[in-house]
Length: 221
Length: 221
DNA sequence: CAATTTACCTTCGTGGTTGTATGGAAACGC
DNA sequence: GCGTTTCCATACAACCACGAAGGTAAATTG
Image 1 (cartoon, protein in one colour):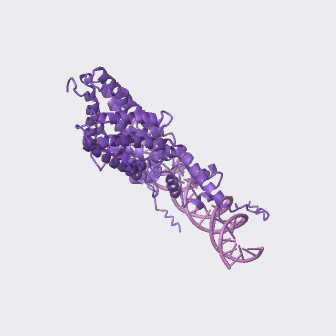
Image 2 (tube, each protein chain N blue to C red):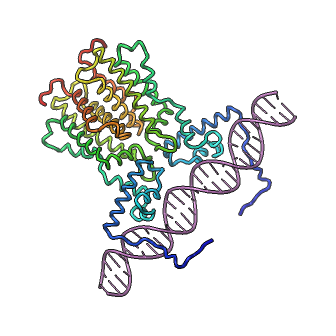
């Protein structure tokens, strides 16, 4: 059966230039993103990822220690959406308009999530991977939720002190309502992003909720 | 190597009585629930499930065609939480108090989700399984979300017609806000239910949101 | 109550995936 | 230009999960 052709020189792949190597690394991560999103993390083998990138498993095991390492590298190409929201809090021009700050932070978050790479990676993290090896997506989701809740709480506390919040709703409750709404919106949209545009849909919800939470006759804006 | 002892009677397990068989079936489903929740669906083998139930894989393959079949059987032991909410809409005593109907439906849903079996299965469905074989958890989640949104829309439309809804918020937006908030709450709570009790926490959110959506001076209640 | 079917479970064979070890060729430092 | 390092392909060994074959006793039928 085996026709061991002696002339069949095994074309062991040559060394690439540094930029080429970096490109294959990116290609591997792109391939992982695509297949993880399509078939789920658990059901995709490293072989499939390598083939999609035009490589073999050797390339994968050169650039990454294993599947978990590749997964983490894929995550590190994006930043968490609410990390921005937390960092945004330092903006001094919005210090006395916390509700407007929330609105803008949400808009930034939506725009970021609509970038294809961000959308894909977060969809994978939320809906297409189970806890596996040293990867615990639920812990990451908890961190994201806690960060968002903390930031929103600060904003709404500020708003309450400035008299911009309805008196019958505590800042804590307002923050939890907002965080749950945003969390649900993200989950729902990431399940099938073709249904609607996150920016328009999300902003209408955010603005409606903020309008509900505002004092009936706000001092300004 | 092979010491084929002719006396080594293979103790193939005998046939159980009907009730015993049903008990093993339930034990297998219980075991699946526990291990799916702990290690995720993809990373648990049928061997582990069988051992946890004190059986071997043969028992699994007798009662179920494969892993997907077992998974579906596990799902069918519970009903979707918002299925109740949808069915609840027919209650005539609440026909003219739709917001109160929503409140009660949410309370029912929370209580149901706090039952250990419901909680476990939904946690598995939302956070511990990827789309696999003919199982598509995302499609199920979409159905649940659509059902809930449809029911809420009906309620809020009714509320609007009765003049119980704030004029600056359309029934559509109110329904989407509520659905997103509930969805986020479910996801967050199912990630780690030890953090807080769903009923108290959830009801405070639901009541706060309904208060926000109510007309400032409601005709009644 | 005996023969036969059927339910229930154990054990074995196979394919696919992982990790590692080996090899080889071009790129880089000097 | 020469040795070293980088980058990737191939080969090999171990494992694990799946599915089916095989075997026994309860249930059923007459």
